[in-house]
Image (cartoon, rainbow, N blue to C red):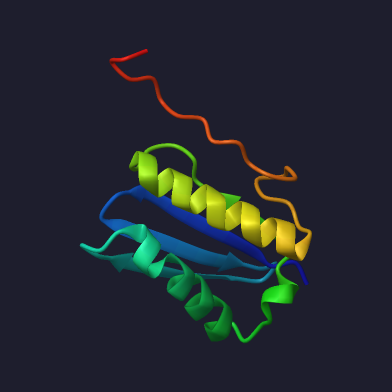
Length: 107
């Protein structure tokens, strides 16, 4: 069975972690005043335990790379790339994700 971990931190006040399989999807949303780095790994672990699978059963990772804070995007990309590398699975159908940031007034 294919299990896809989905990470969305496009809203700086909320993190959404989903685990999608062929038959269903389990979603955890957490609003927090804390930064994403404080709760991202905890939420990923929570979703995996709730679905009663091993992290080794993940087949892919998808992340939202648009919106959100600069640091939030970097944290999500780092976590996704590290998990993908450790588990030898794709992230957004690639071997790894390279951050693409919006232009700023300094560009």
